[in-house]
Length: 240
Image (cartoon, rainbow, N blue to C red):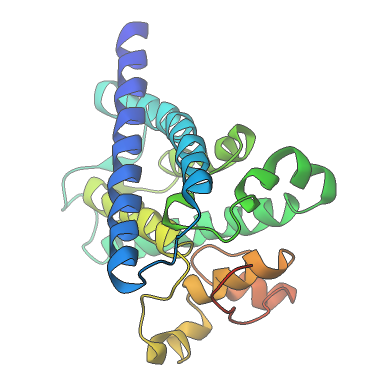
């Protein structure tokens, strides 16, 4: 049993690493096409981002692999694969609940990591990317990676979710993690500066966080920043 659990953890870590390389590599390639020269002179930084991110992949993958084994072999979690086990309306609701819960955890832990001691010990690795690139999405100190790695594995024990809906959550998490750091805005101005942009986080919003540090802490949504007075609007692109 222990060998099977370890193998599942290693396999999931490899999957997370490949997912990171494909997603970040894909958006880095898109950046090269749409914003030629944007990452010029950042080869050393990108190498560090990839190194930290691959280490983070192992940390994210290990608990996910253990949970995946428990789901399949012991039925530990509330993940289900029969789409009719819950009403169909629960599919989008469960996705939204997971995103809201993850966003809440991220906001408060992220904000806590900007306290001076915690920043130096944990979060400085991420902010060493100046400016961040598409490769920086998982560029974390191991302690910060661990704080993020436990969220989704914990939620699957509490909130029922279809395996396909869980895939949607992980896809959104991956895409937004990469696109929020790639140094330019891929979404149209009418979305970013319109009604939807007042509540959804894109690269323009997160860029302000990398400019000023003590603001714009959210991951998917802006409501915690708005409620807590830490929303400082949209940032500018260029060297920070």
